[in-house]
Image (cartoon, rainbow, N blue to C red; front, side, top):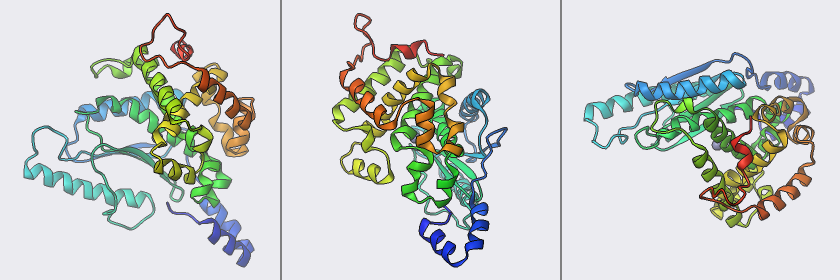
Length: 342
Ligand SMILES: [Zn+2]
Protein backbone atom coordinates (compact mmCIF):
# COMPACT_ATOMS: atom_id res chain seq x y z
CA UNK A 1 0.00 0.00 0.00
CA UNK A 2 1.55 3.27 -1.04
CA UNK A 3 -0.05 6.33 0.49
CA UNK A 4 0.35 8.95 3.17
CA UNK A 5 -0.31 7.69 6.64
CA UNK A 6 -2.66 9.87 8.67
CA UNK A 7 0.22 11.04 10.86
CA UNK A 8 2.39 12.09 7.90
CA UNK A 9 -0.54 13.94 6.34
CA UNK A 10 -1.23 15.86 9.54
CA UNK A 11 2.43 16.77 9.92
CA UNK A 12 2.57 17.97 6.34
CA UNK A 13 -0.63 19.96 6.80
CA UNK A 14 0.82 21.79 9.79
CA UNK A 15 4.08 22.61 8.05
CA UNK A 16 2.79 23.33 4.55
CA UNK A 17 -0.90 24.24 4.51
CA UNK A 18 -0.82 24.81 0.75
CA UNK A 19 1.21 21.76 -0.10
CA UNK A 20 -1.28 19.40 1.52
CA UNK A 21 -4.02 20.53 -0.88
CA UNK A 22 -1.80 19.53 -3.75
CA UNK A 23 -0.92 16.28 -2.04
CA UNK A 24 -4.61 15.53 -1.45
CA UNK A 25 -5.36 15.94 -5.12
CA UNK A 26 -2.36 13.86 -6.00
CA UNK A 27 -3.36 10.97 -3.74
CA UNK A 28 -7.14 10.91 -4.40
CA UNK A 29 -8.04 7.51 -5.88
CA UNK A 30 -8.40 7.59 -9.65
CA UNK A 31 -10.27 4.39 -10.35
CA UNK A 32 -12.56 3.97 -13.37
CA UNK A 33 -16.22 3.08 -12.93
CA UNK A 34 -16.96 2.78 -16.64
CA UNK A 35 -15.34 0.75 -19.42
CA UNK A 36 -12.36 0.04 -17.18
CA UNK A 37 -9.45 -2.09 -18.31
CA UNK A 38 -9.28 -5.71 -17.12
CA UNK A 39 -5.91 -7.16 -17.99
CA UNK A 40 -4.73 -10.74 -17.53
CA UNK A 41 -1.20 -11.77 -16.60
CA UNK A 42 -0.65 -15.52 -16.65
CA UNK A 43 2.34 -17.74 -15.93
CA UNK A 44 3.91 -19.42 -19.01
CA UNK A 45 1.78 -22.28 -20.33
CA UNK A 46 -1.22 -21.48 -18.12
CA UNK A 47 -4.15 -23.80 -19.07
CA UNK A 48 -6.14 -21.86 -21.71
CA UNK A 49 -9.42 -23.56 -20.86
CA UNK A 50 -9.33 -22.29 -17.27
CA UNK A 51 -8.20 -18.83 -18.22
CA UNK A 52 -11.22 -18.71 -20.53
CA UNK A 53 -13.66 -19.85 -17.82
CA UNK A 54 -12.28 -17.17 -15.49
CA UNK A 55 -12.33 -14.45 -18.15
CA UNK A 56 -15.84 -15.39 -19.27
CA UNK A 57 -17.12 -15.03 -15.70
CA UNK A 58 -15.57 -11.59 -15.23
CA UNK A 59 -16.88 -10.38 -18.60
CA UNK A 60 -20.36 -11.72 -17.85
CA UNK A 61 -20.55 -10.10 -14.43
CA UNK A 62 -18.96 -6.77 -15.40
CA UNK A 63 -21.18 -6.48 -18.48
CA UNK A 64 -24.20 -6.69 -16.18
CA UNK A 65 -23.02 -4.45 -13.34
CA UNK A 66 -20.45 -2.14 -14.91
CA UNK A 67 -16.79 -2.50 -15.63
CA UNK A 68 -14.68 -1.08 -12.79
CA UNK A 69 -10.91 -0.95 -12.61
CA UNK A 70 -8.21 -0.87 -13.81
CA UNK A 71 -8.07 -4.52 -12.70
CA UNK A 72 -5.00 -6.69 -13.23
CA UNK A 73 -5.69 -10.40 -12.85
CA UNK A 74 -2.68 -12.57 -12.05
CA UNK A 75 -3.39 -16.23 -12.88
CA UNK A 76 -0.55 -18.15 -11.28
CA UNK A 77 0.23 -21.81 -11.82
CA UNK A 78 2.47 -23.71 -9.41
CA UNK A 79 4.38 -26.91 -10.02
CA UNK A 80 2.35 -28.81 -7.36
CA UNK A 81 -0.95 -28.48 -9.31
CA UNK A 82 -0.99 -31.78 -11.14
CA UNK A 83 -0.99 -35.21 -9.55
CA UNK A 84 2.07 -36.21 -11.55
CA UNK A 85 5.20 -34.32 -10.60
CA UNK A 86 6.28 -31.65 -13.08
CA UNK A 87 9.55 -32.09 -14.96
CA UNK A 88 12.49 -29.97 -13.76
CA UNK A 89 12.22 -27.91 -17.00
CA UNK A 90 8.53 -27.13 -16.35
CA UNK A 91 9.26 -26.22 -12.74
CA UNK A 92 12.03 -23.87 -13.83
CA UNK A 93 9.81 -22.30 -16.51
CA UNK A 94 7.09 -21.56 -13.92
CA UNK A 95 9.64 -20.14 -11.52
CA UNK A 96 11.01 -17.78 -14.16
CA UNK A 97 7.60 -16.54 -15.27
CA UNK A 98 6.48 -16.09 -11.65
CA UNK A 99 9.55 -13.95 -11.00
CA UNK A 100 8.65 -11.74 -14.00
CA UNK A 101 5.05 -11.40 -12.83
CA UNK A 102 6.11 -10.56 -9.28
CA UNK A 103 8.17 -7.68 -10.61
CA UNK A 104 5.17 -6.45 -12.63
CA UNK A 105 2.91 -6.76 -9.58
CA UNK A 106 5.23 -4.50 -7.57
CA UNK A 107 5.40 -1.99 -10.42
CA UNK A 108 1.59 -1.75 -10.40
CA UNK A 109 1.86 -0.95 -6.69
CA UNK A 110 4.34 1.81 -7.44
CA UNK A 111 7.24 -0.15 -5.94
CA UNK A 112 10.62 -0.81 -7.47
CA UNK A 113 11.05 -4.32 -6.07
CA UNK A 114 11.63 -7.84 -7.36
CA UNK A 115 8.66 -9.02 -5.25
CA UNK A 116 10.51 -11.81 -3.46
CA UNK A 117 8.32 -11.09 -0.42
CA UNK A 118 5.17 -12.13 -2.31
CA UNK A 119 3.97 -15.57 -1.30
CA UNK A 120 2.16 -17.15 -4.24
CA UNK A 121 1.70 -20.67 -2.94
CA UNK A 122 -1.17 -22.79 -4.26
CA UNK A 123 -4.68 -22.38 -2.88
CA UNK A 124 -5.18 -18.63 -2.56
CA UNK A 125 -7.35 -16.01 -4.23
CA UNK A 126 -7.39 -12.36 -3.13
CA UNK A 127 -7.76 -8.76 -4.20
CA UNK A 128 -5.34 -5.99 -3.31
CA UNK A 129 -5.30 -2.34 -4.29
CA UNK A 130 -3.11 0.67 -4.61
CA UNK A 131 -4.14 4.31 -4.64
CA UNK A 132 -1.27 5.79 -6.60
CA UNK A 133 -0.92 4.55 -9.21
CA UNK A 134 -4.59 3.50 -9.00
CA UNK A 135 -4.60 -0.24 -9.61
CA UNK A 136 -6.56 -3.26 -8.39
CA UNK A 137 -4.82 -6.62 -8.43
CA UNK A 138 -6.53 -9.99 -8.20
CA UNK A 139 -4.16 -12.88 -7.53
CA UNK A 140 -5.37 -16.45 -8.14
CA UNK A 141 -3.14 -19.42 -7.29
CA UNK A 142 -5.80 -22.13 -6.90
CA UNK A 143 -5.59 -25.25 -9.02
CA UNK A 144 -8.54 -25.88 -11.39
CA UNK A 145 -7.90 -29.60 -10.97
CA UNK A 146 -8.75 -29.31 -7.29
CA UNK A 147 -10.99 -26.22 -7.10
CA UNK A 148 -12.75 -25.91 -10.47
CA UNK A 149 -15.73 -24.10 -8.88
CA UNK A 150 -13.43 -21.32 -7.80
CA UNK A 151 -12.94 -20.32 -11.44
CA UNK A 152 -16.57 -19.12 -11.52
CA UNK A 153 -17.65 -18.21 -8.01
CA UNK A 154 -14.16 -16.94 -7.07
CA UNK A 155 -13.71 -14.19 -9.69
CA UNK A 156 -17.14 -12.73 -8.81
CA UNK A 157 -16.21 -12.66 -5.11
CA UNK A 158 -12.92 -10.89 -5.82
CA UNK A 159 -14.41 -8.54 -8.39
CA UNK A 160 -16.98 -7.42 -5.82
CA UNK A 161 -14.04 -6.38 -3.64
CA UNK A 162 -12.93 -4.29 -6.62
CA UNK A 163 -16.40 -2.66 -6.62
CA UNK A 164 -16.17 -1.93 -2.91
CA UNK A 165 -12.78 -0.30 -3.39
CA UNK A 166 -13.54 1.68 -6.55
CA UNK A 167 -16.74 2.97 -4.93
CA UNK A 168 -14.99 3.61 -1.62
CA UNK A 169 -15.23 6.80 0.38
CA UNK A 170 -12.40 8.81 -1.19
CA UNK A 171 -11.97 11.24 1.74
CA UNK A 172 -11.16 8.32 4.05
CA UNK A 173 -9.01 6.58 1.46
CA UNK A 174 -6.60 9.51 1.25
CA UNK A 175 -6.07 9.61 4.99
CA UNK A 176 -6.37 5.85 5.14
CA UNK A 177 -4.45 3.72 7.45
CA UNK A 178 -5.68 0.27 8.43
CA UNK A 179 -8.19 1.72 10.87
CA UNK A 180 -9.67 3.97 8.21
CA UNK A 181 -10.40 0.97 6.05
CA UNK A 182 -13.82 0.19 7.52
CA UNK A 183 -14.94 3.78 7.02
CA UNK A 184 -13.67 3.70 3.48
CA UNK A 185 -15.13 0.50 2.05
CA UNK A 186 -17.40 -0.67 4.88
CA UNK A 187 -17.19 -3.03 7.86
CA UNK A 188 -15.34 -6.33 7.38
CA UNK A 189 -18.62 -8.31 7.69
CA UNK A 190 -20.08 -6.23 4.83
CA UNK A 191 -17.02 -6.54 2.59
CA UNK A 192 -16.74 -10.31 2.86
CA UNK A 193 -20.46 -10.98 3.40
CA UNK A 194 -21.56 -9.14 0.26
CA UNK A 195 -18.81 -10.82 -1.77
CA UNK A 196 -19.82 -14.29 -0.55
CA UNK A 197 -23.53 -13.68 -1.12
CA UNK A 198 -23.39 -11.89 -4.49
CA UNK A 199 -20.94 -14.48 -5.91
CA UNK A 200 -23.21 -17.35 -4.86
CA UNK A 201 -26.44 -15.66 -5.98
CA UNK A 202 -25.07 -14.61 -9.36
CA UNK A 203 -23.61 -18.09 -9.95
CA UNK A 204 -26.98 -19.65 -9.10
CA UNK A 205 -28.84 -17.21 -11.37
CA UNK A 206 -26.55 -17.91 -14.35
CA UNK A 207 -26.03 -21.64 -14.88
CA UNK A 208 -24.46 -20.83 -18.29
CA UNK A 209 -21.34 -19.73 -16.40
CA UNK A 210 -20.89 -23.40 -15.49
CA UNK A 211 -21.11 -24.70 -19.07
CA UNK A 212 -17.54 -26.03 -18.96
CA UNK A 213 -17.81 -27.44 -15.44
CA UNK A 214 -19.38 -30.68 -14.26
CA UNK A 215 -22.58 -29.24 -12.82
CA UNK A 216 -24.12 -25.81 -12.30
CA UNK A 217 -24.53 -24.15 -8.91
CA UNK A 218 -28.04 -25.46 -8.22
CA UNK A 219 -30.57 -24.14 -5.72
CA UNK A 220 -29.87 -27.17 -3.58
CA UNK A 221 -26.20 -26.24 -3.34
CA UNK A 222 -26.87 -22.54 -2.89
CA UNK A 223 -29.39 -23.18 -0.11
CA UNK A 224 -27.03 -25.66 1.52
CA UNK A 225 -24.22 -23.10 1.52
CA UNK A 226 -26.38 -20.34 3.02
CA UNK A 227 -27.72 -22.68 5.69
CA UNK A 228 -24.21 -23.85 6.50
CA UNK A 229 -23.22 -20.20 6.86
CA UNK A 230 -26.11 -19.62 9.26
CA UNK A 231 -25.05 -22.70 11.20
CA UNK A 232 -21.44 -21.45 11.47
CA UNK A 233 -22.65 -18.05 12.58
CA UNK A 234 -25.08 -19.34 15.19
CA UNK A 235 -22.40 -21.61 16.62
CA UNK A 236 -19.86 -18.80 16.86
CA UNK A 237 -22.01 -17.13 19.53
CA UNK A 238 -20.51 -13.86 18.32
CA UNK A 239 -22.04 -10.98 16.46
CA UNK A 240 -21.30 -9.29 13.12
CA UNK A 241 -20.73 -5.94 14.86
CA UNK A 242 -17.63 -7.58 16.40
CA UNK A 243 -16.25 -7.87 12.85
CA UNK A 244 -15.95 -4.26 11.64
CA UNK A 245 -12.39 -2.89 11.82
CA UNK A 246 -8.97 -4.26 11.08
CA UNK A 247 -8.42 -4.68 14.84
CA UNK A 248 -11.69 -6.64 15.11
CA UNK A 249 -10.40 -8.97 12.41
CA UNK A 250 -7.22 -9.59 14.43
CA UNK A 251 -9.21 -10.28 17.61
CA UNK A 252 -11.49 -12.74 15.80
CA UNK A 253 -8.47 -14.40 14.24
CA UNK A 254 -7.08 -15.13 17.72
CA UNK A 255 -10.35 -16.87 18.57
CA UNK A 256 -10.41 -18.61 15.15
CA UNK A 257 -13.76 -17.00 14.37
CA UNK A 258 -12.98 -14.92 11.25
CA UNK A 259 -14.77 -17.28 8.88
CA UNK A 260 -17.80 -17.85 11.11
CA UNK A 261 -18.45 -14.18 11.89
CA UNK A 262 -17.08 -12.10 9.00
CA UNK A 263 -17.68 -14.42 6.04
CA UNK A 264 -20.55 -16.67 7.14
CA UNK A 265 -22.39 -14.20 9.41
CA UNK A 266 -21.73 -11.39 6.93
CA UNK A 267 -23.30 -13.37 4.08
CA UNK A 268 -26.46 -14.09 6.11
CA UNK A 269 -26.68 -10.39 7.06
CA UNK A 270 -26.31 -9.42 3.40
CA UNK A 271 -29.05 -11.91 2.48
CA UNK A 272 -31.25 -9.96 4.87
CA UNK A 273 -30.23 -6.72 3.14
CA UNK A 274 -30.94 -8.12 -0.30
CA UNK A 275 -34.39 -9.10 0.93
CA UNK A 276 -34.94 -5.46 1.92
CA UNK A 277 -33.67 -4.33 -1.50
CA UNK A 278 -36.09 -6.62 -3.33
CA UNK A 279 -33.59 -7.48 -6.07
CA UNK A 280 -29.89 -7.85 -6.76
CA UNK A 281 -30.21 -4.84 -9.06
CA UNK A 282 -31.40 -2.64 -6.20
CA UNK A 283 -28.77 -4.05 -3.87
CA UNK A 284 -26.01 -3.13 -6.35
CA UNK A 285 -27.29 0.45 -6.54
CA UNK A 286 -25.84 0.93 -3.05
CA UNK A 287 -22.22 1.16 -4.22
CA UNK A 288 -22.30 4.44 -6.20
CA UNK A 289 -23.70 6.22 -3.11
CA UNK A 290 -20.58 5.57 -1.04
CA UNK A 291 -18.02 7.96 -2.66
CA UNK A 292 -20.00 11.06 -1.69
CA UNK A 293 -21.94 9.98 1.42
CA UNK A 294 -19.45 7.65 3.10
CA UNK A 295 -20.28 4.03 3.84
CA UNK A 296 -22.50 4.43 6.91
CA UNK A 297 -24.70 7.25 5.59
CA UNK A 298 -25.02 5.44 2.28
CA UNK A 299 -26.08 2.27 4.14
CA UNK A 300 -28.70 4.06 6.22
CA UNK A 301 -30.11 5.91 3.22
CA UNK A 302 -30.14 2.97 0.82
CA UNK A 303 -31.48 0.29 3.18
CA UNK A 304 -33.67 2.79 4.98
CA UNK A 305 -32.59 1.67 8.45
CA UNK A 306 -30.08 2.91 11.04
CA UNK A 307 -26.98 0.73 11.34
CA UNK A 308 -27.56 -0.03 15.05
CA UNK A 309 -31.20 -0.74 14.32
CA UNK A 310 -30.17 -3.17 11.58
CA UNK A 311 -27.81 -4.93 14.01
CA UNK A 312 -30.74 -5.41 16.40
CA UNK A 313 -33.05 -6.62 13.66
CA UNK A 314 -30.43 -9.04 12.37
CA UNK A 315 -29.70 -10.38 15.85
CA UNK A 316 -33.34 -11.38 16.13
CA UNK A 317 -33.42 -12.93 12.65
CA UNK A 318 -30.21 -14.94 13.10
CA UNK A 319 -31.30 -16.27 16.47
CA UNK A 320 -34.73 -17.42 15.35
CA UNK A 321 -33.93 -18.85 11.87
CA UNK A 322 -33.67 -22.64 11.68
CA UNK A 323 -30.73 -24.25 9.88
CA UNK A 324 -31.90 -26.61 7.14
CA UNK A 325 -28.98 -28.37 5.56
CA UNK A 326 -31.16 -30.70 3.50
CA UNK A 327 -33.61 -28.10 2.20
CA UNK A 328 -36.51 -30.05 3.69
CA UNK A 329 -39.55 -28.63 1.89
CA UNK A 330 -41.84 -29.42 4.81
CA UNK A 331 -40.15 -26.80 6.91
CA UNK A 332 -39.94 -23.20 5.82
CA UNK A 333 -36.46 -22.37 4.60
CA UNK A 334 -35.39 -18.93 5.92
CA UNK A 335 -33.53 -18.20 2.66
CA UNK A 336 -36.12 -19.50 0.16
CA UNK A 337 -36.69 -15.92 -1.10
CA UNK A 338 -33.23 -16.13 -2.70
CA UNK A 339 -34.43 -18.86 -5.06
CA UNK A 340 -36.66 -16.45 -6.99
CA UNK A 341 -35.18 -13.00 -6.39
CA UNK A 342 -34.33 -11.02 -9.57
ZN1 LIG B 1 -13.07 -11.80 0.15
